[in-house]
Image (cartoon, rainbow, N blue to C red):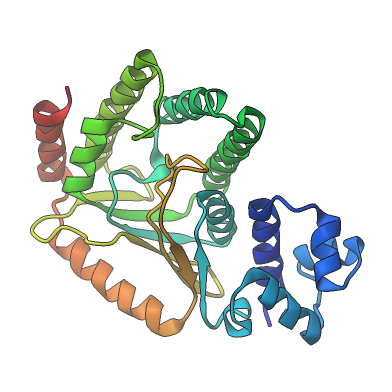
Length: 291
């Protein structure tokens, strides 16, 4: 059993639920100290695993890493994603408008401003601001993790997703002041320019391509570490606000899922535009769709 993985899922649940550690411990029938030990990856009794599976509303098999983990809220998904990235040496991305690990400071600045502005205007301001600050902290942690580990990245971006990104800007869909929306649009254009530059220069450890022909209908990531690989599928892009996403993300380490997604990704990379051709297409999108 991978008790460290179970502990990470338990921590993700605690962050998502908003419950105090004492409340979760009581539901599991353990002490708060035991709860914290479980989060750190210490051995968990089988009867506690059963109760934990009931608490998380998943099957015991999923909890043990055999099934699929599901996430209906962006905040919990981002925390679990960070945990998986912590063990990843290779990241393969299919679909989406950008690769978050390689995004610029302009992207993070626009996300922070948009989320903060939207939270300050929310009816439950304090709760919304706390969620926004927590989500921004998770994004910052993912960036620090990437800078420290430097996993190799291959990303096949979607043309339609990139076009929407340029049209709507960073953190699309949020009600924010016009000046903030303009900053988000400018950040999207700057990000697309940075993507094109990386496609041409091919920095060490990063390869970006643009899907040609068939557009990815559902984005996913394959993350490989020394001991295991995970498939991550989610509707929650990195700039999805903590309470603004509607969808269900999933993470699984099942061998058959990893193999199937790996095959699709290899075909997508083989057929993708790369290098100067990809960069030229991205710059064409910038000229024709960014207003």
